[in-house]
Length: 222
Ligand SMILES: [Zn+2]
Image (cartoon, rainbow, N blue to C red):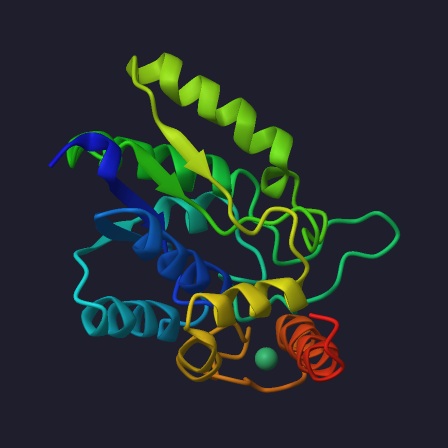
């Protein structure tokens, strides 16, 4: 199969990357998934990713990125560090410096190996919480660098880049995956699937977006 029809999705089993998975399935003939295991605070993330990959019948690569945890202890990797919002211009405690730089670079190396041209990531500037490597300009810059580094013509896709959470739910609905994503994905920092613990910053963001989408949909605004 030609390279142009093959894609790799950076996949965590969360709302955003699962929406990207369904987006990729509509666009490309052959889709594979890559998940990074960096001793996440919640191993549940890997389990959820595996289950979704299996259910969708997709080849799933799980890459060991434990070194990231070694380099950058933070709230996603250490139980002892609380999850906090970024305040007063500080980055949130969930920030892992360089995470997307590394993830996308490894995804590209994998894409090269399986002869895929397209790489899809759920990063989003709208709700980017101050993560510098979730911005559009960063992804464009890295796309150029990856192509130069491997003499390739990768295309990095960011279908969620300019959507807010309500619009991401709308996209899930358009892709016919609204209920699936609502029930099966894991976004919660406390490791609870679906609507989650309802208290952590990630659940709050997800819930607010969902409520906004459902409200606007019922008013015929979305
Ligand atoms: Zn939660």
